[in-house]
Length: 170
Length: 170
Picture 1 (spheres, each protein chain N blue to C red):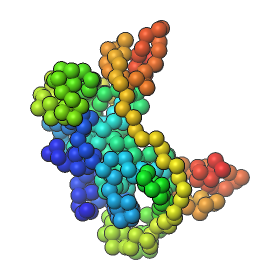
Picture 2: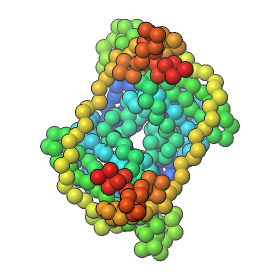
Picture 3: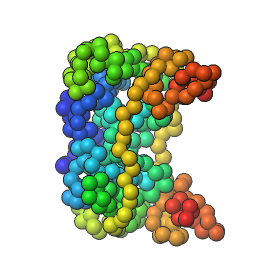
Picture 4: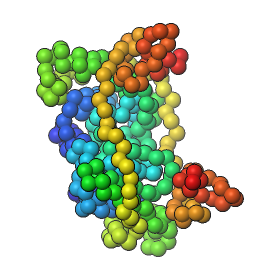
């Protein structure tokens, strides 16, 4: 897995992609890449690091095994559905603190982070976390108002008719 | 852009990745790939198609230019921040309806979808949509309880001290 591929996917290199790359290394070493939903990631921020994590670990937004908790924390938990093994990775130093440590500008930081031993910048703990349910495929219905498709579990009833949420809210 | 690369990223080929691939083709032709946040995607579902869209269009979860509305609809809106040009793409036929149309099994559907002219399976409209604010980088603080990093905009106050949301909720 090359850092350049992540930069291609994300669009640019930044401290976040480098942090995500180091997390990806730890996860791949421990669990391998999640082809389907074998591994679940619970991420507590939606920063650039998540793109590296999606790309490397196979825990992606579209597959349903990337769970977002909007806590603004550099905390990342990974669960292996088969074994129940879980690890919680938290970043020890902020980008600002890393810049001070390395006497580096923001744009110089990715290179410095990539050179680090991942076990140096994160606290990694074994944890017990119940994995969420696997993603479900839902049947599609047609909204009685706009006639567009809507997945059954998101349909609403309005004046006795099945509608989508945007039409429900109108 | 090769379909196989999307399958690699997502982990498998399915009707969703094929639908996302066709949407990606339309978007790239019209707007190009979003290296930074030039293009914004508003997606009304979190199905497999979104991984193809992330990969092809550069509108990704970690970059903040992929906005998720949990409506369960195969509706995808793309906005060009520079020109203000926006298009709304909605899928005309459900996976079930496409299987009937092609007399194909689910696993045979991706190939059929990939062969279609994208303008055959979607309704594409020019729309006027205000783009969301660009993603912001926030300073990090330390939670007074767990001592972990927390982004300023998600910090809470508890007994006069700055804490992260998980500690706030304890």
